[in-house]
Image (cartoon, rainbow, N blue to C red):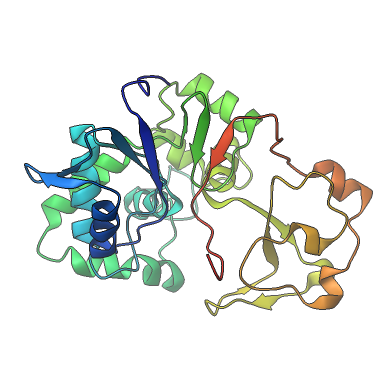
Amino acid sequence: MADIEQWQGFDIIGDVHGCARTLEVLLEQMGYARLGGVWRHPRRQALFLGDIIDRGPRIREALLLVRDMVEAGSARCIMGNHEFNALGWFTPAPPGSERRYVREHTERNQRQIQATMEQFEGHAAEWDEFLDWFWTLPLFMDLGPFRLVHACWDDQLIQTFAGQFPDATPDVEFLQASVERDSFADQVFDRLLRGIGMHLPHGLTMRGGDGVVRGMFRTKFWEEAPETYGDLVFQPDKLPEHVAIRPLTYRQKRELLVYGEDQPLLFVGHYWQHGT
């Protein structure tokens, strides 16, 4: 994916989550200026790693800022799991499905999108425009010397997906196909936009810092020779000590996805860590 030669450098920006004012301060600190209503840099381009929506106090403003930059050519943006979730929230499930929408309208899912919906009250037509824009966001970018994906790069999934969608943007039918658990579409969205998880042993569960009880934990996909659960964990919530020191089985090691040091430099968003 070319046309990177015209830029002297790139500024890669992780999850914005509605923090438009913070983003403006960051852009200004990096030498961008607002010209003609759009933030621009004379020599550099901003690359957004998705998750522009939800959570923050200025979601609508953040979307306007990023979309205007993309349309003006001063930025690019890939899809995050929150944009995918928004599309799924409003996209009807395929005929024969047990659900009404691709993303089930549960209380938990409602809480995730609530701030976005509240901030777009009175701007329904504009929100529809942004939903249309989300469909134009690629799931990944391969820019030659480096790559972008929201959560995890899986060569096999990406090569197969790119064979169907050369511009890396899914269509409605592919989104709808993701309702089938473990289908190819489900694997693509889950792996690329949410990352890799591993089940806790013996049916254990953990309550995370966000209050959600889970039976899985997020793992690294670049660890070359992990030996224990603790070697793989990649999340703010620590594993219990007796789990962290638990050795990985031979089968678990064989099934691990590893992004090698010989592959192009990879940038991801999605994850948050204490002290970063």
